Image 1 (tube, rainbow, N blue to C red):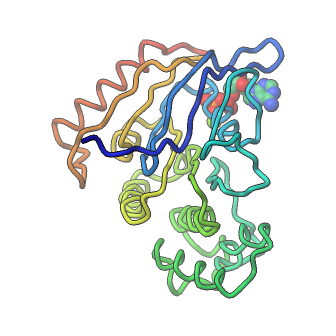
Image 2 (spheres, rainbow, N blue to C red):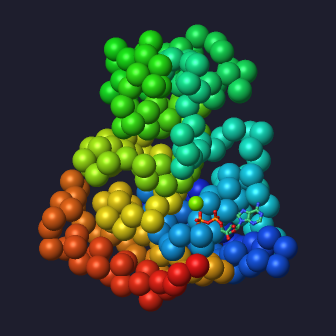
Length: 253
Ligand code: ADP
Ligand code: MG
């Protein structure tokens, strides 16, 4: 008997244009509960626009997006978002930064203190609660952003090239940490990147987007045992397959 799968995010015939600029051209796919889906695509193809639509921050021009069966509404705050840009508030310490999302939700009860403490532990920032963002490393800043997004116990987590500005070693470490967070929480994650190694390391599935207007070039299930070895032959094969697809779309824009 087949186990029942829960569709968490459903993308149905979605297109998006900004006046005459067609960005997304009729894409459809489902994300199953607990899945870690990585999306790679050429720069400027519309990946951020796509994530914003899943978060309900942009509307599709046509088609339908459902999260937990309903069109996404940012007011419900059931969607966590870790952005590309620096997003911590420099005048708040780590603890207060993580609390920020909960405050927006006007959820300042006792329970929220224990969630914040749990999140601090989860991302390994115990002892740094009173530090300010400029007093901790870039990698730690990212961990705070992840903890803040998870503190509201979102239904899904969206991540938009969150580690693009980190050096290679720090990225390597945070990949491992994010993987173990996903193993623990089994949160549904949609993670956008242009870094193929990152996508193959993190994803249960890698979706390759085409150049603009976006179509789905291929959906690649990554069938590698955990922990994944970025230097193994099979890993490199997956990487080459994705790079090959992206290369076909390589244009200077
Ligand atoms: P990516 O994240 O893949 O680099 P984006 O989603 O940021 O791509 O952008 C895709 C295209 O849509 C770009 O050409 C960008 O200039 C355009 N675009 C994004 N947001 C807007 C907007 N609000 N109005 C007009 N054009 C936009
Ligand atoms: Mg982007």
